[in-house]
Image 1 (cartoon, rainbow, N blue to C red):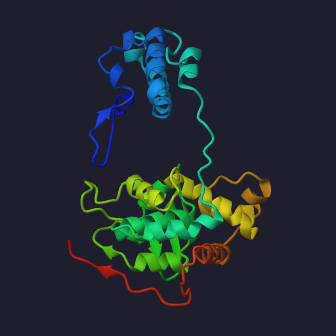
Image 2: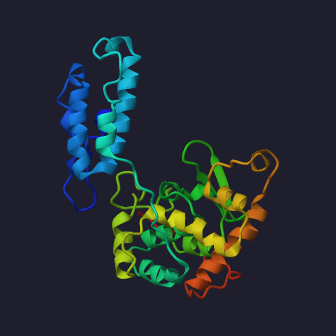
Image 3: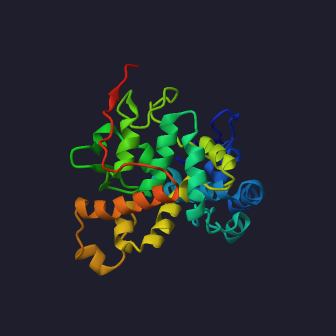
Length: 294
């Protein structure tokens, strides 16, 4: 429910009240347009991005309440969160343009590979080399990696899974990681045993490389942008990244097996490594995966 969006924080910083924390003490009957508009005006001044998400969650929650007999009588006929003033106070999300350029790859890889935690370093490189959403990479389990057929099963953002190639350098990165639990990118300090989004380490690496402002999701954007140099078919890139296919031919008539995707993906990876000045023998067998006791 919307009350779960009450606090933000992470890493070594103290937890701060989330955007919706101010509304927590109020009863449903008190969540009128005036109250929500005042809340939006205040939150929009300091953290508009997270406040916009909180507002959307609140709107959906109140819509749900209006459909429930137990709560409908406590709310006005019109959803009090759906107001023009609240929307204007929170503003519109800007277009994100953080992206790695071809000439910046060497500095970025050098900085990421110098991170002290090899699991985090491998994870961040995988985000760029797969073009996947950061959360999709973090959710990888060892059972999702098929070294025999060189494929990786990724859970899509909304539903289902997609199979992408396990390219030579990615297999090299994975072969260097120990298996401490079922997660590929494990964390000894996480309650789930799975690494959470490594925003802070990536930010530090980008700062060292002189690339401040580049986000983890910007790496996904970078993968798509870098493929333009190789003139890779748009449908191939979309299938690897898990983007929805729009054209009728792509949806219903084009079937690309993993081997075909691997031809293109391997070429993309080799080109990125070349631009990053990384010497890597793609034909060399990756090292065996090690099992490490907890």
